[in-house]
Length: 329
Image 1 (cartoon, rainbow, N blue to C red):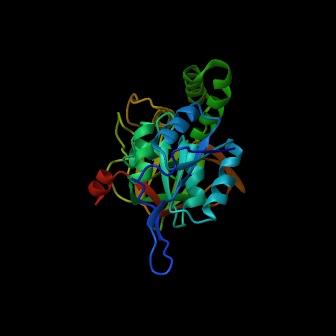
Image 2: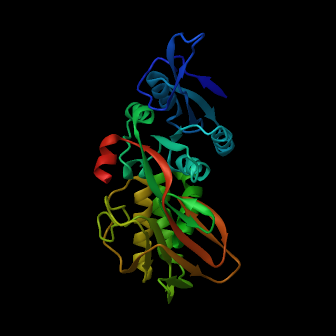
């Protein structure tokens, strides 16, 4: 489904425009053709209508309202024509899908935040107000963002192995019947009662460490390690993968809840768990079996062992507000 913006050429704030001159026999009018920016809206999102309205009112976009299972192929088709920038409207999952397609290309990714907490947008100074974000999408500057890889799976925010995978699975199943808040409580109780440590080897900076731990957390960028902001990204922090290993069972339950709070918008945790913390460019996790389920930006995926994580610095072109570009510099 494609909706064309009525006002696609009326705005002149779009920096990605093509100047063209038509001259016959040495004369002729000189005119500017604005580039219409492809904009993709996750039509299943609760904020889809608001996103389309913001794009239409701002102008300069060709709006594609697509189902979640069509989002990746639709974006890939658009990027094949090498647009200067594209827009994706949705939560961190939709943004992650767009990033997987656009990373490594010359197309910059602009974001209209439509999720619960919108980590990626907030971390890069993108307003959560859709009208403001749509304006930034047309007039913002080009910046660069780091991305992480779990094997070949790109992630923008976090990945984890162990208890958090079971926590997310149980919570998502229960939320269909009892709602998110009660499901989160039930999932936390279940983890506290039945959580089992995972034996693993962690290779960091050429040093091999052995753990029996319920959870390992890997974040793109330096993270807070103390409450009440445990797991949150530190503004202006180091470019790294921040690896956090929980050393005891009760702490792992609290960390799992804290990581979910970072995803869903809860702000506080009871206390900071005891943990080991490393800031690296790459690491390897070895566990038993050929495959293990891993949480990647809130999605559960099966990945082979050993599991290799790496950071790719400044790999993703993104559209950011000018003031954020200046502060980052």
